[in-house]
Amino acid sequence: MALAAFEPHGIPVVSLYLNLTPDQHGRDNYHIFARKAFADQLKRLDEKSAEHASLERDVERINDYLSIELNRAANGLAIFASSGTGEFFEAIQLQAPIGDHSLFIGEAPHIYPLVRLIDQYPRYAAVLLDTNSARIVVFSLGAVEKSMQLAGVKTRRHSMGGSSQARYQRHLENFHLHHVKEVVDTLDRVVRADNIQKIIVAGDEVVVPIFKDAIPAHLSEKLVDVMKLDRQASNDEIAEATLEALRQQDARTDRERVQSVVDAWRAGGLGVMGPEATLRALQLGQVEELLIAATPQDLKPVQTLPADAAPEPMATQTTTPANSDQRQLHLSDELVTRAQKTGARIRIIEDPELLRAHGGVGASLRFRV
Image 1: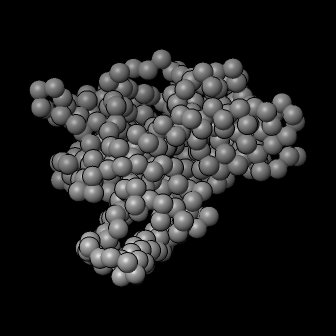
Image 2 (image 1 turned 30 degrees about the vertical axis):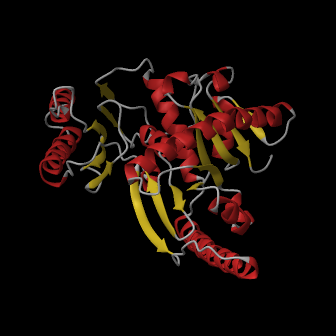
């Protein structure tokens, strides 16, 4: 994520998250939040300062974006801006919903909410197939990233007897096998090209066993679930069913993953637990996978952050104020930003009880020092 590479310059950086779905009266209210929140923050800055000038320009650019470039079909929006640091501006429109409007102003982008969204709505491939057709859909952040159709040879049932029936059955099975192999080959290319880590398959009792026999090991290990779906299901229906399957799998495996890291830590192996130890491991580039609580308020603040940590956020405003304080917000960003910079995987642990005894964070390690 390029946002993690941002270097602080002492100038405010805006991190704005907006829920674009209409309220219960069918009205948009994100612009009301943005206008009031920015007005409040501008009042806190000296009108003659470089910080005020930068934020004022950010507000203009954001308002222009909301008026001209916003896709009304989007459900969420994340904007990062700092006019005083080289006209930095990045907007990410999302199909995935954002719960609350929130504004963070600091010296670096506040990316933790975006990292959590990416974890909740990962990139994955859904495969719907029968014996003569298939659809492969790649989803990312709740939206269709790509979709493709594959058509095999249509076959009809015939009533025959004896050896003719047996030959026809073998002929039919060959058609089915050829079709499934074509689907698997196409899926393999998609998975490699888009770095897909999770696959869900939907098919009937005839084609699924053929698919499982044809799929190679490196794809089989990415297979999350096999389910039944109407082959005419819309992309929205596919997304709803497959996301639920992904979340059920995450709930099952989160406990196992946390326990594995705790066991490694207790044995003095490739694991650390707690904010301080995890930060040290991130500083040294040791972390293979960061395990972090789903909300900053579940993190235990540290007494002292590393000397090269980004400065603490200047201001925070949300429509539903969370219980997390500035130290917890700061810590959440330090952890995920350092993980991004060092190429560590990030796994958000939704059940707060799994990491509560360890300050909300831990990590598996690549090596010991």
